[in-house]
Length: 204
Image (cartoon, rainbow, N blue to C red; front, side, top):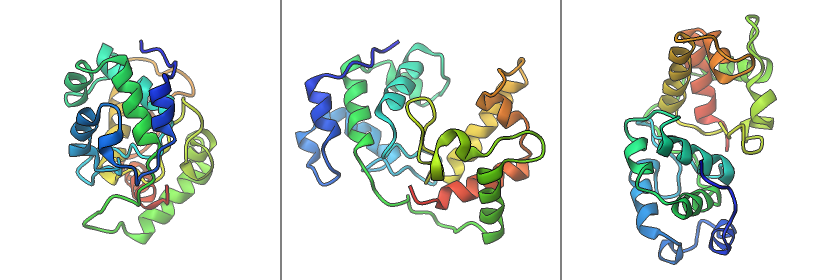
């Protein structure tokens, strides 16, 4: 597992704004590779690439380390993460955490009824024991430390796919109480659709 100690170069990168020239960043070549899917400033993509911008850097670095050691599955991310050094992972995390672009462009705007239902789920949970999304992921879904990532502004397709992944995992064993695997196992397909609609338009 990757150590979360920061190097001086990472600390410097973390403080940079989105206007900083990419050429001045450590490992600019690796950052450009990420941008091909995640957007120039990590805004994500309606095709399903998640938003990285503004995410807690410790969370991002840890996620990359999990892809690298195989404890988090992804046909796309695992081959990429296995080529990264610890320093590169920290530099990537620092760069994208310092970005604050607007929402990723989307071809369609979610129906207001879906957004409203998703907001209710995020604020109050449901009668099946699903807690309010904001209770873990922070006010307005902007994240809560290194454990609970920001979900505000995540593209619709990513939210749907990620929750479905948790549901699939729940079917292979007994989910840990309070984990996202357990939470997702209690969501209906309609609720997943509603949550994805709301988060995709929520201001990050």
